[in-house]
Image (cartoon, rainbow, N blue to C red; front, side, top):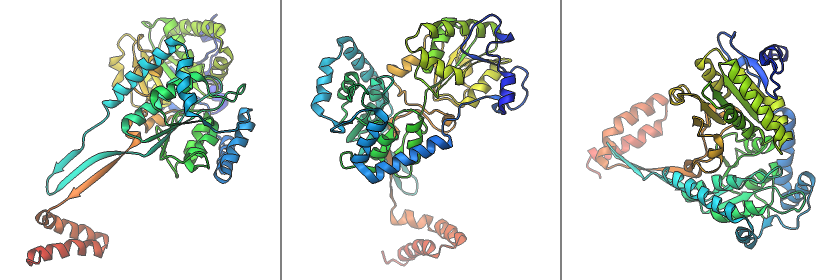
Length: 455
């Protein structure tokens, strides 16, 4: 959609908003007929500039190893390190240095996350009909968890990535996290979470260079089999770029997103704070309110303004909302869900009188939160499912991080002579049709051997 057309739809501080001051742009879709996706603005995450920058960093790491990682840390994080790895004793000691209440919260979250992910473990299955086919899961040997840093510490991401990997049976779980600019160290709360989750190795490495180290390996960092975890656009792009060398879990887990669908039953302050919750992560995210009542949009927008002005992270919130913060007016609930499905958000909150009635219409979302008492913040920390979710529209074909992201499935196929020969004619027919003579011969030799009494 052209920028001029978008501007004609946007009513950020205009007639629709009345006297309401708002940091949310206003988008009125009620007059739109037909396909709606072309009328929805969306920030471009993976432009040519960021992709080129990421490719250069990855090449530096691939060819330069530890030396390149240390140089990137000086250049991008502003600190000089003597060692990339955080010593295991520092990780263990961090548990004693953090506040007792936070330590208890880590334990509560960890137990809930582990309990939920254990429900995803499935026993081997056997299918017997013309042979025995057994299927079972095998854990990957190593996993790399990227944990964001810089603007804030994210111990929750440690738990949400490392615990599912451990439940899956991964032997070696590695965490990479950017060092703090002022000290060059990793925050105690993040290290404490690593201790709680049973992380095996922690490295003070951030950005695209961390993804390169995990994918290709260096003198200090052994490469892993799968990489998971959210990050800024450079981290997300880097994961796409190394997908030919390593497994990438949960598609494009980039800057945070939320769509709050609300009706007149939603407490305006609840809806507003949940829009702000994801916006406070900072730039390149997306935070939308979608409703079919202007009075709801006005009330929630006013609350968003009030909460933003009082927030210590006001600059991060405003930077997100200025580019991708919208109050969207739709004709009815059906059009609201059409908008939500077109955006395919990381978090979708259905803050309506009957949210369950809308769930069946949701096709694309990383996670769905129903009602005013199920905010995405619960999902971020303690609900149980991983908060590593697909972003940038990838919820159309991808899902939340699960135990399955750290496993491979093996099939064991066993036939008796009689069972193999019974299916041989079908094998020969397929192989002949495809022009693969050796395939046909493989089945025919066995059939003839059994029928001739040779076996």
